[in-house]
Every structure is written in C-alpha cells, then in structure tokens.
Image 1 (cartoon, rainbow, N blue to C red):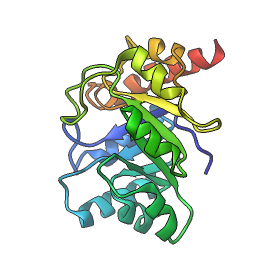
Image 2 (spheres, one colour):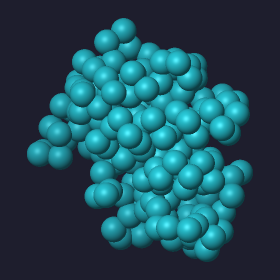
Image 3 (cartoon, rainbow, N blue to C red):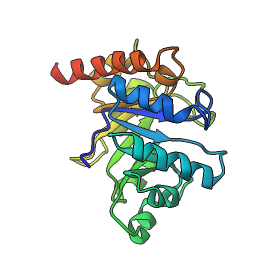
Image 4 (cartoon, rainbow, N blue to C red):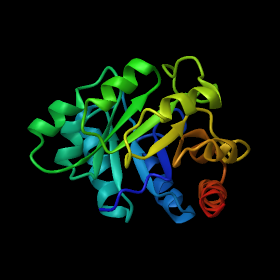
Amino acid sequence: MTLDVRLLAIAGPPFLTADSIVDSCCAAQAGGVSAVQVRLKDTPANEVLRITQTLVASLRIPVYVNDRADVALAARAAGVHLGAADISPVLVRKFAARPMRIGVSVGTPEEAGDALRADVDYWSVGSIYRTDSKSDAGTPIGIAGFRTLARKAPSGVPVIAIGGINQSNAGDVLRAGAQGIAVISAIFGASDVENAARELRDIVESASCG
C-alpha cells in the first residue's frame, strides 16, 4: 500500500472508546484522512487485535498500530508506530514475518539520531504545540524546533508534525516544511468527525498546491 501520511488520524482515548473507534474512524476516512493509527495503550492486547482487524477490514486507507508490532503483524495492519521507549525499529525489521511500514516519534536530537540509524518509513516530529491528548508529549518544541529536527531526516523519508495541531495552526506547520500532520483532538474531539477531517484535508491539499 502506498505510503500516505499527509493526514494521519490517531484514534483512541480520551475521545474514543473501544466501542466507538470503528465508527469514528470510518467517519474520518469519509472526511479524507489518509491513514489511521490505533492508540489504545491501556487496552488488553486481544481487544486491540480485534479492533485493528475490524478496522483493516472496514477501511480503504492504511491502519497503523501504536507501540504493538505484534498486534500490527497479527492484524495484517499496514504498519506500526514506535516511540522512544518502545521496541527498536531495527528489531521489528529483523523479526517481522512480513514487510511492514514503521513510523517513529522524534522529539529530541537524540531521538533523531536513533531514527537515522534505523530503517523507518516516516518521522513524526513534536510535540509542536501544547496538547492535552497525550500525557507524555513533553515540552512543546514549536515551529523552530520542528524545522531543526526535520532537517535531520534522510531524503525520501516523510516528516509529519504532531502535537496540538488543529484547523487554526495546521497551515503554519505545513508551511514550515511538514509533509503531513498527525492529529487527535482536532478530528476525534469534534462533534462532527467527518467534517473536521474534511476541513483539515482541505488545508493539507491547499498547502501541497501552494
């Protein structure tokens, strides 16, 4: 499946539950998101597997799993997203039974160095702005910090921005060089998920045309 992380919707708490995640992701797809990441850190693995399998069967867009490479493989998801405290991307590549996409979180120069030494498909850089959606997001790095880290990415590896991104500031981040955005509350915290996704998709497409 073609790598398209221009608008990555991260699905999970605090806005979604195991019961609402599938319908909400279908609405986000209808609004134009290019990929979905399942982030259910406190949910039992068998339940994350069930939900991911349902999403893979229901959506036409790629599905990624946060942290759990084993779940991503078992569910035949498109890939896995790994943070600094998760299993090494190098080990995932070594032991995965099939090819899969790997994205990594980058928030410091040290994490950028680790990402450079691994074979990954995209960098998710941030947190750009303050966010209440992720308790361990760390101190915001701002636009300047994003530019500094994004410049370290190898050619051909997309760099997307994450953290506090919404309809009012997405254009600023994209103009700063982000090749995509990852969002949580701006889509799944909205009363109309499909419309919120469509608004962000329009911003992303306008930036790519500019």
